[in-house]
Length: 144
Image (cartoon, rainbow, N blue to C red; front, side, top):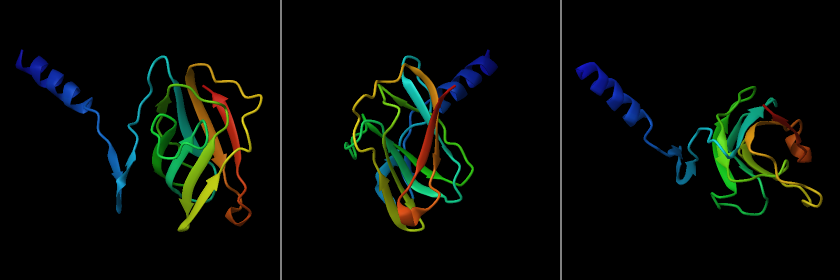
């Protein structure tokens, strides 16, 4: 019986929601990892040669620092994939914010005309920034 209580305690403690603080910036939090049923769950795959620092994805554009729309993924090294972040809804395009080599990069779609909301499920957004000097990025969204 003691073993069951011990295991249950570990499970309950490990499920406690926590927010991670980005080093040297205590005002910026990394959103909690994890998929939620009935939500649009998006993870980021970095296929560039750069480490994305303080990476965030704003899936409706223009709502910086609004946790309903913008999720903070934190630092994402080259060739790595983040964990999932849950959104209430999302378009297939959005605003990307990151710091690369101490330079803040913000890339946003021109408009959302013709875009429809994604169905609930799990998605991987592959992001490539081949040349930061040209402020170009390439994304591909894949439903799992």
